[in-house]
Image (tube, rainbow, N blue to C red):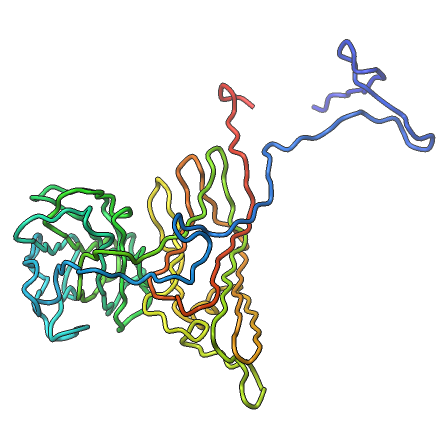
Length: 371
């Protein structure tokens, strides 16, 4: 049953409602105001590396002397064996990236594990990353979990993080070799001793298990894999609304007949990138691969990607810009960071930077659980 109520004139004192009549032809009204539940500010910032600053036209390739883990027994590196199940083949000649053999995981099923064991321990502090190559035959999207996991051990004891290779590769790219690069920091092993690497197939729910080959897995000694971060300050959420990649290099982008720009689909400002630009989302909740861009067509395959370019006949500049209809966000309280990782030598470019724009939103908590 509706309850009849009245607004009484007052000045806002002694519980009375403040009512004003500022205009002769407008009825009396209540003095009121609104205040946002959370405070937001627009924010734009380049991705930054602690050594190289904002400039990404650097050498992200690895150097030094790597420690080989396994390449299908083409070399006498670490010993491969089946830790769980018996379906991994360590000297397969069916598909290989280099040499004549690779590790065959096409017949593996849920929880099958391959163990790679070194004759003696090494220290992770002497290396900067673990790299390897994967050749995907099939990677089903059915079921609840289809993964190829990687973890490190020392004397049979797990150390560091249990990672999914899907966070470092494109699982929809079949029948071609893809390189994955995992830094020591992401592995979470620090300067620890180690002597084992485990690869595990996970197949939960409907659909087939991932079908794949592994080759040329090794520890990288120096340089490489440059990470540029956009870190979220404590006490805030950051909503990523737009990201742009701007680069310039020595390339003539004029087509002779002038019908359209001379932009090669399989290059990036004239450069061939083997590994590409990796966009990652990282926090205390884990690591997620948000995209891999090796060339023009992979940038342009991203939904809502815009492209601009120009040049003077000697050099060409390009800008790739995408806006998110539903902005992904990270929390500073969970050590959130958006990362752009460079794994190729891009020193021939004149310019390369990545800029993000979004909203910083203060994290508001309710006092005593009440509004």
